[in-house]
Length: 154
Length: 154
DNA sequence: GATTAATAGTTGCAACTGCAACCAAGTCAA
DNA sequence: TTGACTTGGTTGCAGTTGCAACTATTAATC
Image (tube, rainbow over all chains, first blue to last red):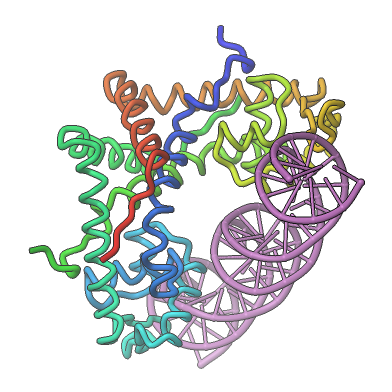
């Protein structure tokens, strides 16, 4: 029976995923942070709006699994930065419809292009076989966790 | 030629990695945080010390790519929590040798065991083929980024 | 209609983070 | 030795985060 002392962090899947995620994210961060003054959450919000058009904050939370308070603050910042506008819905005045301004769309187009390039370089280095494989696996992992939180009661 | 507007966050490798990492980490976080009051960095420091015995803060930074200030603060907290001791080296009085106390080793053994279990469940769900494959790929990605930061100059 | 519950979004707070600046100790060279 | 440089580790600060508590609006129940 395995003892806790046998545990090696370097083989722990959540740790490996974190390392890989941080390694790749760090490189791209410069693009949206230094060059456009966006936080990561802001960039993600922008990416969703750029992709899907108008959405509510709640929609963004759903599709990208970001905390609603993070989205709230990101949206506030982007609004004052002139990147998006919000209009409260007539049907339900709790709801706000978010959409990128022309300026916001322009920024999205530029960062999006950098992102495509970045992704392509990354995948080129991994090779086509691995590059296509990794997507499937990662999505599987994400889905796994969504469907049921792992409960370990000692 | 691809335009920035074609960009889809859901296919962006850094994003997928982040989602997968967060999904898996969140589940395990409860174990070390709620149950033992450790931060993630503290848990990682502990895992390294538990695995390798005495190390310096600098060593920990090297092997696990954690910022030195994070390590510094984690170590301080763990010391006041009675989980580790530091003794300044005689040869070089800048250096501090860190090692777990018996209490620290006990906690490590328990969390380590939970971690092994957690990892096993995760891999079981993925299936053996994927589980073994993902390690290789992730390590490849980590190594990629280490050897050379991607530079994209528009 | 009044009461209760649910939902969209915000805010306060305490903790965590990253970066740059810092201190103390050691090295190297003249 | 003195000075310039490196290195191990800490600290200050400004920004980000997560959680719980909050407001405002709508829905449900009686």
